Image (cartoon, rainbow, N blue to C red; front, side, top):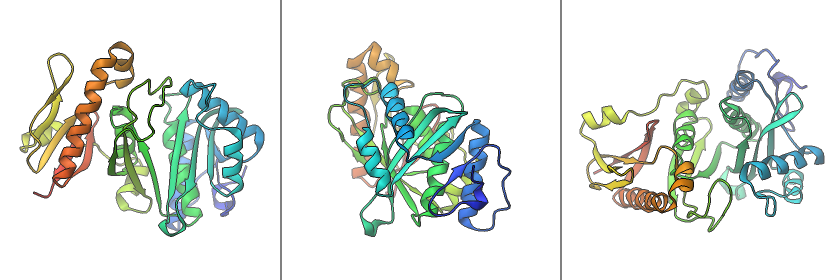
Length: 303
């Protein structure tokens, strides 16, 4: 395998067996952080372009999303994306593909990559973190300073991962962005998404990639005078509050996936309530500034 210090702009391999070289540039430090994340997760992460590897990505995503008739990515599309120089990365445990991530470039003037889809089959091993840090290194090696992607704002673990572990910045709420998806993850719920931008050289992002970021504390925010714009009612459903104050907290359910299966009506109530709270606060100048792992967005306003 190619060691990080030997990588070029044409390829990037993160090998869990490689000892990290001394970082000298920002790109070197990004590669070193990606290497550390891969070793911590017990995987090797590399860019993919061969048909056999891409077929593995199709199979992985099909299994995760449960869409054999309409897979999230097709072999033909992956082949075209890689031929055009876009990003497809895979995480391997030995010879077994356990995670993958796909992204494509924005318009030429935007200096950004859109990370369209990522998934892992082995949870609890920080494989997703290793994949994202590999993607960050790859983007910096290709002269790109920002990566954007969307995620479901109701999924608390993804909110924590994106906003805290990676320190991505939320920029836009997108109601029912993809339309009906109807798969093992999304069910038949509206496909609302939160768009985030990952500014790859921002000091806050650099600290997060080194594992030094700490999430928000809803308890501390409440003690400092934050208002509850959306809380949790006695029935486990959303309890709207006041969309006011310089700092507001917006709750999400602890596990929206299980809730969709057990009570889809209640899950839909949460969808609408979170949408109304976050878009309502944004209309008054609010911006999401953090996330408490217990399930609270922290929204700050300039008012």
